[in-house]
Image (cartoon, one colour):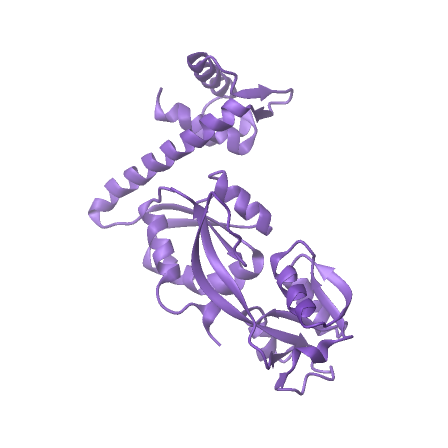
Length: 299
């Protein structure tokens, strides 16, 4: 077997498409099919189930082979970049997936520093829902994920990244806008704008309110922080959000952020698959994210 054949197989599983795998590797779709059949003949196992239109799904044996191939490809790429790095030049690609609010607000400052320090590294960032970030980490689709309220899973390694204080946000016209600090119990009965129920930040906010016997009236639920903020600016309700996500609006005067008498914070973490073999570029990226105080921890 050649390393190129293993890469073609991994690309096929990643894309679920013979044509896309062919495009990635600058070969014909027929050549992809021939390489997959050669692998199946070698192991006497069907690795993929083919369907019309060039799409496919991996078999159980195919997924087992994919996991092993991905580790081999990662190790080969890491070695390749390490050899290039003997000349003290860090290059290559880092694949990152994160939720939108963390990617835009917490990750942005560190990303700018990294790009300036290592201009020959290509950082590819995807903004995904939390469950998809975990899925892509486990399936080797990305190098690292960055999530809020990290969940312990058998195949996942967690590296703390920071903590972002939670604050009440309201429009400048709201009755609570003039307060410098409030007891969270004063939110009882308030019209409330929140995230959708399957989002970790929403679950955490609900638990905070429930543990204190506070009942709010959810009037709107969204899957992203930007729509939450726009609705609060329109004075349709109040919300509890990470402070870092509203700094621009507070400076512009379109939102008011009010601290609580109690301390609440959203933990943020880097996650990766256990046993993941990182390239030099990925190692440098993680080092830069975790060195010194992060924006997520700043007041």
